[in-house]
Amino acid sequence: MEVDFYYAKPYCRWERGSDENMNGLIKQYFSKGMSFENITDKQVQNVKDKVNNRPWKRFGYKTPNEVFSYYLNNNGHVAFMT
Image (cartoon, rainbow, N blue to C red; front, side):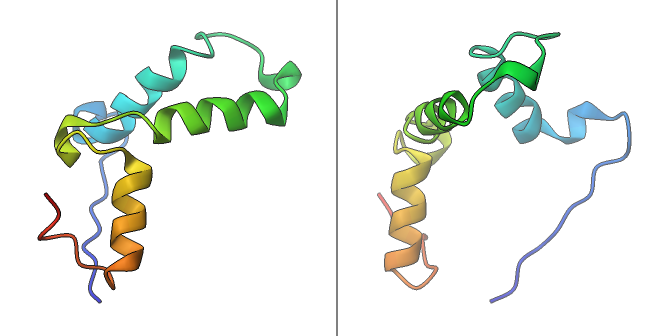
């Protein structure tokens, strides 16, 4: 299996749309400037579960967990997922 890799230039956040979107989702739970020293593993797991079980338009309103599971169960082929 071949995978393409793309590297964004430093300080060019518009080249990292998916990353910036995920940061925005996480900031709904952990506000900017908040100290991460007092955040528990349970809190992190809770946010991770919420984000990975949230439907995404780009996935046909399936969750990242559904897409990943489908990918694993179909030998890496997601072209026919509808």
